[in-house]
Length: 568
Image 1 (cartoon, rainbow, N blue to C red):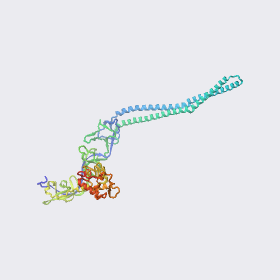
Image 2: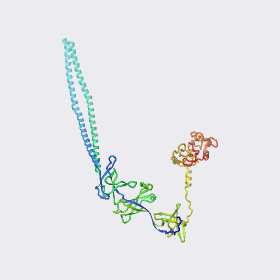
Image 3: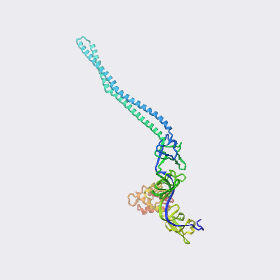
Image 4: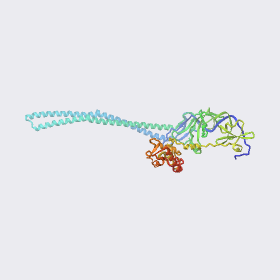
């Protein structure tokens, strides 16, 4: 009911201190938390179960056990790994023996087999030389006897054969010596050296394998040790429980819970560095600044605590499923001299003092009537009712400051909406942005914006679907690119693209590559001089638009049907 016969309730305008306060709920936490994380790697893509866990809230000293994770799988893995390490050690021993054997074999050949074989051949050479000498002496003796006629020619031939045979035997032995010294020895040394290098490479590989297997064993043993989680510092144990976006629990620290590598299990907050984390609604976050004073109320503490805003997040917190459209920004408030009785996780009410004015004219919030962005109050002036427009300043949940319009001790009506019959509100010209929108629609699009227009901006020709002029410089409507451009702007784009000799007019040669422009050339050439200047093109273009009822814009440019369009 906009009119009421009941007597309005009045409130005297006051002039005094004013506090602009933002009131929010928050949660106490420590600004310095020692995070205790799971250092055990997941096996097979799964986490590690918790076997035992210290109760939350326990005061612990550095080095005390906080949690025991299940290490049975790791212990079995360590057992298997020890066998692998022993096998690798055995392989190294075998490889070392193989290297030594290869080195000895090479030395054995040089100092034994080679020398023995060489001496044997040298002995054969000496025997062959002796046999050759004897055969030559026998041949000489036979030749002397033959000269005396005591020996037959056949006997001479036999002695000659003996000499040749002795020479052949000697040459064979000498050849075998050369082969031994120059070829066989080199071949054997190459083989022995290759065997040595092969066994050494095998030894190096086995040693590396042993190191890797030992490192793996040490890693497993370290993982087993990491299953016993100890406190890195003194503090009070706080479980790092997590809640899901639907309000349920995503992770609870308890026996049987599975933890992942690098997942935080506990927090050990520093009780001397406590703060409040409050989430400020997006409608008020612009008011909050770092350094603002804060009063904090905690149920566990009798007196109010003092604090200051130390950080305001620039990005909103992740939304909940039940309120995903409400954006909230985390704001951190340092507690000055925190008492020992407060604990992390406690709920705190924070009052952030956005503005503190020593003296300000102020009225209740519900004494203000707002219409069309103007604010009015109904003032009792003796026996009359006076409607006054006011300019408001800072406001809080209860009061609003007034810069002008009322003075201290004026009596204003509470809830003037119920007493509109007593108000005389002047005619207010509502602000209209229509003229600005129309002006914007007639302005040429910047090249950078036009190039990033709707689908197909710039193709075909000077503007495809959604570009400057194509279909919807004529055709269909819709959300497009450089729609809404006036004919003069389109003509300017055409001249810029086609006037290659920059003489201010288009010739038939310049438009020959554009079939649509070529076919319409005679219609645009009003004076029939064989050229179309800017004025002729603009006049012809406007004439076509008027005749066909088309718009000058792309899709969304308001073309009611198919206009002439811009040339391809």
